[in-house]
Image 1 (cartoon, rainbow, N blue to C red):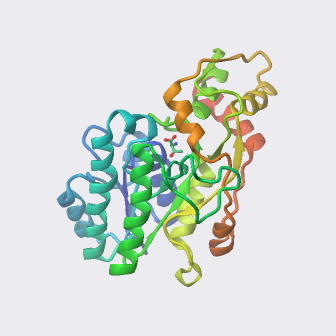
Image 2 (cartoon, helix red, strand yellow):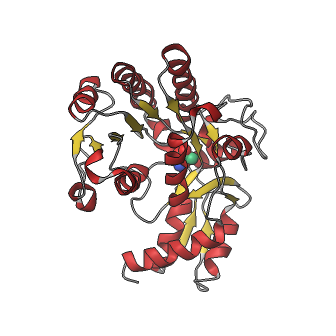
Amino acid sequence: MKNILVIGATGQIGSELTLELRKRYGDDHVIAGYIPSAMPKGELKASGPSAIADVTDRQSIEVVARQFKIDTIYNLAALLSVVAESRPAMAWKIGIDGLWNVLEVAREYGCAVFTPSSIGSFGETTPHVKTPQDTIQRPRTMYGVTKVTTELLSDYYYTRYGVDTRAVRFPGIISNVTPPGGGTTDYAVDIYYSAVKGEKFVCPLKPGTYMDMMYMPDALNAAISLMEAAPARLKHRNAFNIAAMSFDPEQIYQEIKKHVPNFEMAYEVDPLKQSIADSWPDSLDDTCAREEWDWKPQYDLESMTVDMLEKLRAKLNK
Ligand code: AKB
């Protein structure tokens, strides 16, 4: 039986990943790692063990690894793209110095490590349509710089020390549980909240801005399936392109309008978000993930929209 530590367990992905891992591996085998300013609450707190695991403090990770005999770490600590531009030093400290700490503990205690990269690891000079697995990565954002470095450092620990590092490049993740914070793709979550609350949505990106997106159940499945994949099949490790859907603001708006006919949207472009989005791919080619570990998403824009609206209506009592 595995013993898993999720670092960043109270964040957008961590909060749902921890519960999904507990379902699959047993509540007591999945530790929710948190920092004191973001303590676990509710089901996350009640359903299993939690412990302080701060990436910027190697000892805190080491203590948890030793105490709970951890063999797998999901390291989700990061500042998202927009907030990283206003706090670049902190983005580096968490994303890279923090990763270094995680990898050193993994090396010492024999843990496998999943540290996600992102579509943000690409830049203007990357081919934007059906972006290949192996291609140009010259991002100009601090988020992108940390994500490319994450991929390289994770590969380095695998080839140099044999640490079992694996990762995907997450697209924008859409969920109805914990809201994201400070990302370029956040609009695709916020738009559903506005629709369900009966509010007009003000979109920070121009029509025609295509980006890859994914519904949370697929994102969780991707992370767990990759960590369970037979190592002999993996030609790539850090990090796999994965794709489920690509749309622009107009398409998601029209899809929601099928269910909320009075829903209104206006555009008020945020120049920083727009420039980041323009530098990211319109769509990814995920052939390698499909071939090497049988990646296959379940949700498209249509089925995700039905589920998002239903779950959010229940959550917000609408
Ligand atoms: C962001 O928008 O910063 C993230 C991402 C795509 O990595 N959601």
